Image (tube, rainbow, N blue to C red; front, side, top):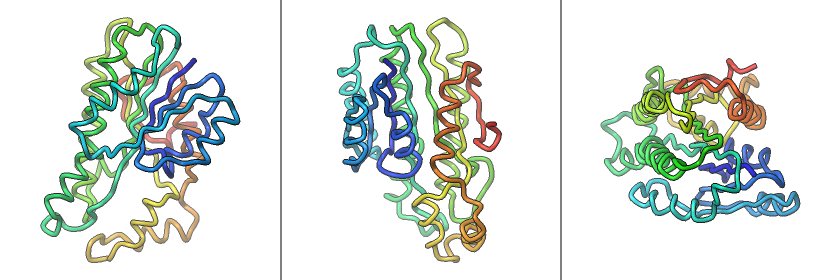
Length: 251
């Protein structure tokens, strides 16, 4: 039995990852604000164990309790591998920093950076006694490597996630029971997040026309294509410990 803990599974990449991982030999935990009946039904059809945990990742102080609930349902002695995919993320607020409300800034950093940090911390604590394969993928963004007008919060959170991943990679670089971790930028996908970008006023995001062109010119990757590559990285023997990689570099 392999266990997968995935955040942000109601739509986009997270939803596609769950669909592709549904298997009778898998146990999937979906951490999301909106459960999806079609995924639940498909899991039942394939005899795959699936648990939905409705949770708002902006409530960072409650994540430890959440992970206790997850691991209460896992018998580490009966599985051979366990993975955490920190996929959930938000763009808002998309505007100049002085136009952002403090609550918007806090929410962005909580979901994009603090939640994955705390989830990673709790995951590593819980799997310490487990001698099988233990992996984490943090879904990052190319926005963590260069500035975008109006995206100061998102860019900062993704840059922080990348460096956090590298730090944990150093900490987990030795020992037979080390957790493997990397950060993966999924490139530009055809998701609701992209639709949200295209609806942004040019005064808040100067490159909005460029992103409209991505859609109009068919340059957006499908979430299924990206999900396949994420899974390929997740199960590959040559796991780039502490690496910060781009999905476009995956063959």
